[in-house]
Image (tube, rainbow, N blue to C red; front, side, top):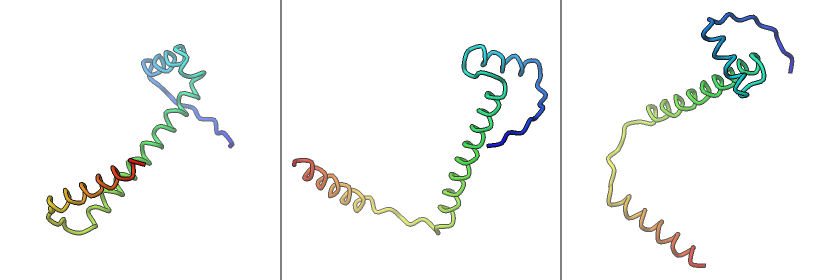
Length: 89
């Protein structure tokens, strides 16, 4: 993977924070710390996109229908009984 050299400007407080993370042994240099922040931001953005897609899917799935709690309980009991029966072996 190729690299690109960038110049960034930090406040003295931000610079001190980066230095403290390096001194603590969390990172070996400024670049490693910044790359870690970018990776985390990319992961976060991806997670947000997945959540938004799930929300959109739910919103586009049509109106909600009433739940039949007795039917839900009946199915749960059947599933539990099926698992109890198969775990006996």
